[in-house]
Length: 148
Image (cartoon, helix red, strand yellow):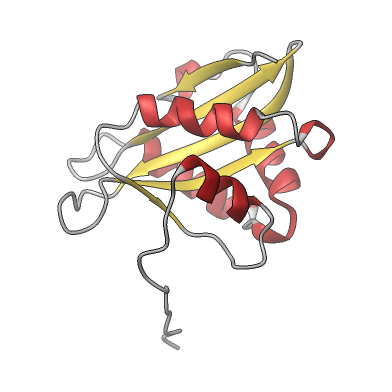
C-alpha cells in the first residue's frame, strides 16, 4: 500500500493538514509514549527554526486522503560525536498499524536526512521491534538526572 508522504519544512507547508491537526494527531497516536502538545509544538518550532544549529522537518503521511502517519525530525547540530539527526516523534494511526506505513515513513525520513539518525525508544514500546528491523541498533543506555 502506497502512502502519499509530504515533507513540511515551515508553516507554509501545512496544506492538507493544519499544524494543530498535525500536533493533535501525534498527541493522540503516540498515546502513552508521547508528550504534551506544548512539547510537540516546541519540537516543530525547533524543526522550522532558521538558527545555525537548529532545524529539521516534519512528514505527514496520507492514505486515501486521510492523515495516517506523522514524523518530526530535528537536527542535533552535533554531527560526528552524536548523530546529526534525531527522530523525535513518529506515529501511525492505530487503525492503520501493521500495514508497513511506519516503515515507509521512517525510510522516507532517511532520504531527507544527510547523516546518521538516532531516536529514543522505551524498552516496552512495541515499535522498538520495527526500529530494529529497519536497522536501528542500541549503542547506549540513556540515563537522565532530573535537576530540581
